[in-house]
Image 1 (cartoon, rainbow, N blue to C red):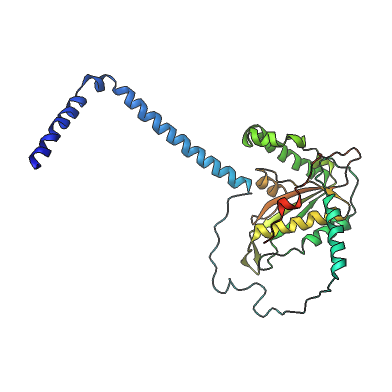
Image 2 (cartoon, rainbow, N blue to C red):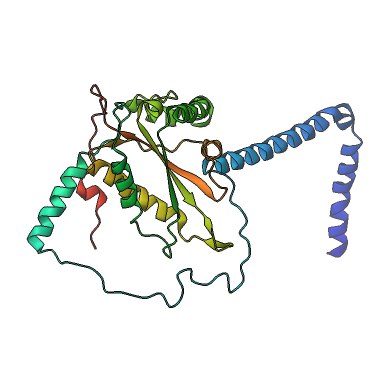
Length: 301
């Protein structure tokens, strides 16, 4: 059995030897070299594409995340202190019938809120802006680190620079980065890379998220930074609407670093949202849309 198995391999080995010495491989060797070169080039292009995509993703979110500085046990202590005093909750219970009426009234009021792209140049009383930002500042945050900063821009010159930065990137976004499906999905909004509302609106509110802050000369980590800032932005939008103003929720793609530099913000701050805020233009129009019904957004268990 053993002899038979060895003998069975002899023809195979002989055939392989004949194959490598055949005229076919000798004549066509350059095709094999070309195939190897093409394979290596494709691998290199795929690698470069992956690096480019990762870089663009990092720019979209602002800048690449920084490596956290190690903290000692003393630096990692609870920032309000273990002895933070607890006080009684200020709370007044609302009767059920009044709570139902309030909830319905608030829903109906907020349901009239719309995203607006056509603004009047009418000035906003400064106290209104201060109050809506104070309202956003009441938002809950991870470990009460309050990882947000609100930058209000009213200067016409500065708004023009903001618009130039955003429109330059938005043209590239619409032409190259976003893709046909994304661009097609936005057509009902009748929007493209020209953003006249950035200079028409009397006020631009930039919402920056802080991954950390410097407290008493040490680095203070902010927990659940993204979630906290998103909640604060929601409260800000509600406060803007309640004050009789309109806004546009904007997340300018690939503009974060340039806008942060323009507004002279520190490196620990990353742009989360940009809100043009003001009064609607007299000829303002909005898309005729409907919101999902309750049964599509509510699950009761």
